[in-house]
Amino acid sequence: MLRTSAFLGLFVSLSTVAAASTPELDKAVMAATHFGVKPMPAPDRKALAAAGLVYWKSFDSRIPRNSPAVLDWLHKELATTDSQRIGRAISTPEYAFWTLSETSSNCVDLFQEAVSTVGKSPLRELCIWTKTLRCYKDPGDILSYLKRTGLSNGQYNGEFRLQHFSIYHDTITGYVVNSIVEEAHRGLCGDRGR
Image (cartoon, rainbow, N blue to C red; front, side, top):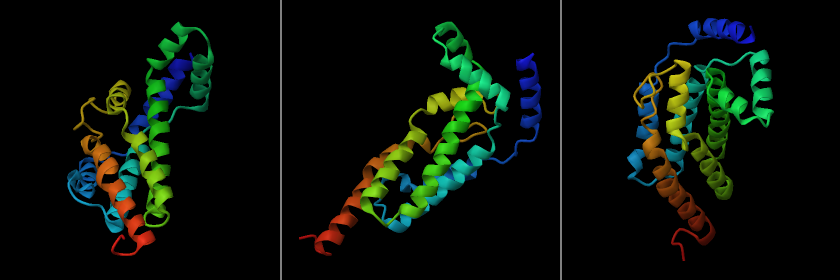
């Protein structure tokens, strides 16, 4: 009974989800990475953080949330020691919606912090950029959850575009980190870096 009412509530929620498309947002983040081949001074990092924030806000706004009753059921199923119950729970659309909403909400928070941190404390900025990598660690899982919920076809170029995911990690661990370290070094040692 709970699952039937949860499904009906979810169906109503799905019908009101914004029909916004993410190809433009995906392309904007991809462009802001400079395709991983160009240094990322503070203004460019700020643009990347802003593009990431817009992308994740759109992503987050398109994920229906489970009702409190469904969340309660899900938490109880996940808190058990019965591996079969846990297995059944993590195979449900409700679990997929919960995981997607947790991921996207966290990414919105991280990119909001990135926008406000760029160019200030180098160590804090490095920390925040590193934390944003969590948003991109499991694209296969995200695609699987999107497909399970019926929100996308499970492809990188589906209704939720994830094409920029492939280059984001290299951009952060390469040019973004190197640019922050170089700027910090110049700040500590003067423009000549000696």
